[in-house]
Image (cartoon, rainbow, N blue to C red; front, side):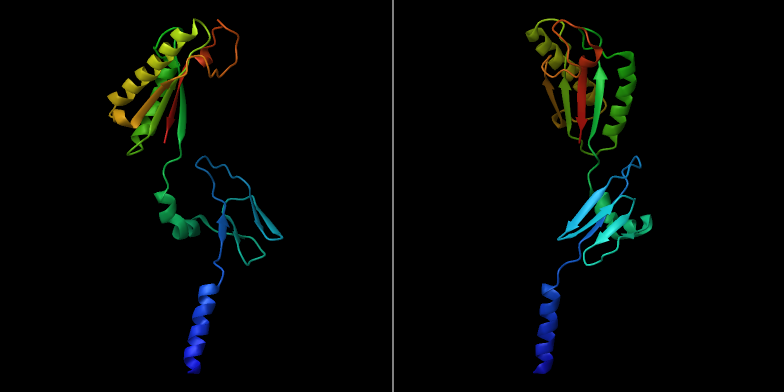
Length: 192
């Protein structure tokens, strides 16, 4: 009988034990390292270095190696979706024709899309304030559809691409009416 009671007490101790919480700072793809503040009750720990680690129940910070992080969290990290990417393409005044620089940037967009097996793409067209608002609405939608055509042309399924035209309502650079601003004549491409 006492053995059974001890076994039950051990089982209860295991079931009621608080889980160990671990927070580790990972560098971003470009090497940037952010700061994380971990607050547990009255205790505060600040993690500022790559692989700095805070564990509940431990007063001291530790630092994992890149290999330890890979061994411990590798499967979960590889299961994460790719980070969203945003691209801006610019247009020649009054047209849906890309500028020469944006034609080069389009290659980067296409490369990012090819890396994703099932991308979700949002293409939003914009104009500057030259012309009337109704014409700018049509032109912004036309720009978005033109870019969608490029993407479909490289094999991205049309149903994975949503388009919208915002006309002159969401200016990147605020201007008065009838002011040419090349940075407002754009398409934003958001890739997830």
